[in-house]
Image (cartoon, rainbow, N blue to C red; front, side):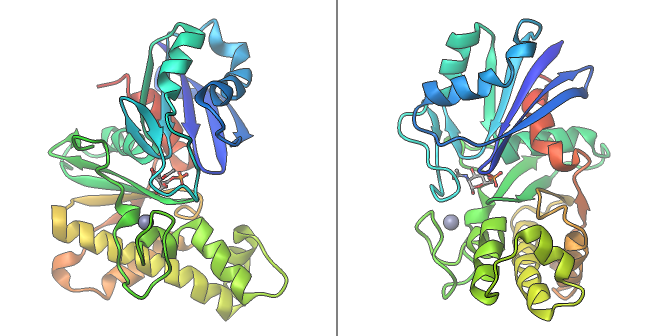
Length: 287
Ligand code: BMX
Ligand code: ZN
């Protein structure tokens, strides 16, 4: 089976071919403005044209809430989808291939779960990237809820005095910990703007950079402990550009160690690395 995998993030779209469980081709484009599902699908398919004739199906993992009607944003600041946005149906019509679609972090959680030790039954995948996304596996099954919202753990509010989140709540983990939140904090701190990669590089020598990163890691630690308390997770798998940045996981682990024993939970890096959501897109066809 050859699957065209598409991972739609707030900043970039990754596309690839997955065959025999391996990602054998990969390209990446910046995420275009989502004006309509039609225009968005055309933009994506233009980058996959060379592969289309030879794939059996298309797996999509996307930022946003995925329902039968299409995709919608929980936090439109990360990617605003006009309503309706029936991307799956449009892709099916344009390609004549079966299309399966899941939220990005839900898809990645399934991939990461399959790759884990079989003793694990309950786990969460957390991506710290443009936003903070999540996917939850309970009793060995992906739990997405009746409306598909389950796993949107980036919108657990942890600070009633915290920043306003694009979802409309105050103090969401996403508003404190995401790559977007980190960039906002660094823009407020430094007169000459630096990007998040530079921020991480400077952390060893610049205490202000370290403080910004620690604030994010501490919010993710709170989220891990909250999920442990709620779901008694065996493990949390961390992914995303920020989640996988050098030293980030260690900062999260140290912050968790300072919490009470009952809420300790192991946190590990995604085996799918930066492509966990892309591989998850393809693994929807693997029950
Ligand atoms: C937001 C939300 C989630 C998504 C998460 C990570 C939108 C558009 N997205 O919380 O559905 O899983 O961001 O998204 O509301 P990413 O773009 O950072 O991968
Ligand atoms: Zn929110």
